[in-house]
Image (cartoon, rainbow, N blue to C red; front, side, top):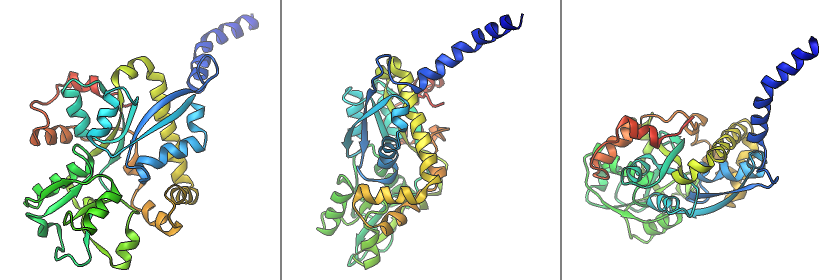
Length: 324
């Protein structure tokens, strides 16, 4: 009688046990599956470090994943790499850009939030520049990374908020932005910590605007991680495994700040003091992977900027978003 109860109980829990084993294990051949990732702005804390540390600490391997990374300059470039099928997942891309791609028929699916609010981005000018605040940049040239990026979105929101009309210029990544500012190709350029905090301290450049000053975006998921929808439909388990690995590593990074700061410095080959200063810009709550907050804001922004001509229906949003 007792033996029968044990057999019955085992038969009930066997499917659960097998499911857990499948989630944590490599494929049926015992091999890791390659996941191709498009990651913008190599070296930045939130875009780069979680994936590299997840690989270093074995969290990707636990999910049966081997990462193959394609570095991009952000925005539309990341979207193109993923929608063309050259990468399976794109990281840290402006929410409105992914919504736009979806509404134009591209195969995309949002799989997690990436950053909520914008604690990181700021705009700089040369130390000898006459411009002291963002209001002084009316009619001047201001750099952002790429069309459709979060830097593009933030600077457009800022121009609307402060009622100015600068000439917006795509300058590429952080090093390109700095070069454009110092050679006077643009009057102001973007950056992200800890890049150039040391030059600010030395008095070579000044900050004229911080994205964190925009109150309207504090509760908005400004960047998301997204997958090629065709790939997702065939490999949802693998994509969910990657998101789980990111969650594990974010918990680990903030529970072990000294190790995280040291790795941040190692990846970028800059001093620990710079890495520590950069780390302070990113509170853990800004990097939560769920929920996806204020998608309506990103939709309204895409409409306002004429990136899309109509808002997605609730049914279309359900198809677009797969955030657990």
